Image 1: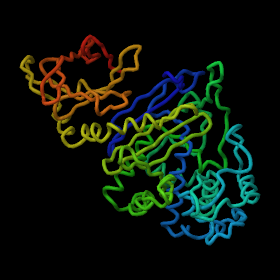
Image 2 (image 1 turned 90 degrees about the vertical axis):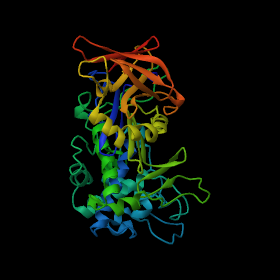
Image 3 (image 1 turned 180 degrees about the vertical axis):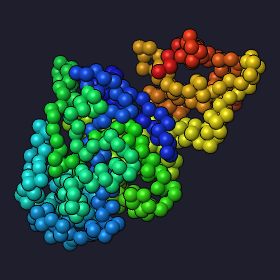
Image 4 (image 1 turned 90 degrees about the horizontal axis):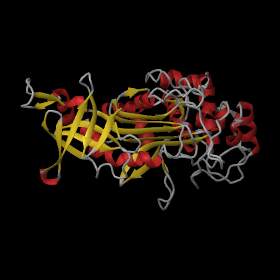
Length: 448
């Protein structure tokens, strides 16, 4: 990639399936093993979603009170308050980042990855003062989320990591996900993180580290496949209701906006979930930014479409690409994998007078195609009209998406507005008869 990103992975989820994914680069410059959908990346602050779900699971069972003083569960987490607050620091305040807590502790552990252990966390809390009264201002707080993770451990009687594994990862079959950095798997299942490029254009590898007491704020490592399962859980519970890990009503309460600035000039936040607007439509999720990694996890709940993108660098944001992909999700992905497209794929054939069996299987053409040496990637899928070609790196994927109507054999024609037909697109096959490339105009795209 032009930004010299060592490794990246992206996936699009529709309802209960990972419908498209793509990988870039390698897990480590030392092993050069390619990134896959199972490669674990540090997902940084997206970890806070799992922390929030863990806390709300305990709230549901009656072990944790959303509005009780956090210090009720551990007196070591009581911070000096000179603001004259009307209410204490609570789970609710921490989850929506309006508890008035400082963002961090007393030193910059993000620079040298010397994250505090539990004892040091308590020292940080005891040595600081609240910045504001609760609900006076929104202040994102890694410290607060770490404090909440400690309470999850105290109330449940097991470590935060074990609680998340037992109550979230295992039920959702997120078998690869970890609650701290699996450096023993670097280059062989875990993407090694790299820092921003130096003046010479080089990247230094992130040193081996543990997030320790800050794991509830930023310590989870996960993959495209596992995060797809996580997204599907949201869609499933939202549609069917009932209870799976959480009650559907609890999850919906977490996703509704609990805080937004008086003039709508501050982030809109639920309980752990960020709420944002893409082209006038609300999306939910969280972003992540930490040593050697960036992640974006976004879901559009009404259409059951989600996107996750992970990178093994900390100086390139996946947010813009994820938002661009969302410009096509409702119009293309939801359409392609909706009822009509399912029927099209089940039938997966159109009449073809040139073939003995009078059929051509449209599913043979599905897949990702790229132009060698150029950033020209397209995804070809099946819709009710024939095939659609979706440009992956376009700033306007929906506006540039094409529909291709079958003509004969391996030849299709681009459908213009008002259903007139334009140039031919011809698919090529390899010696085994499998589709291997396509030619549009004179440009050849190879199937990945």
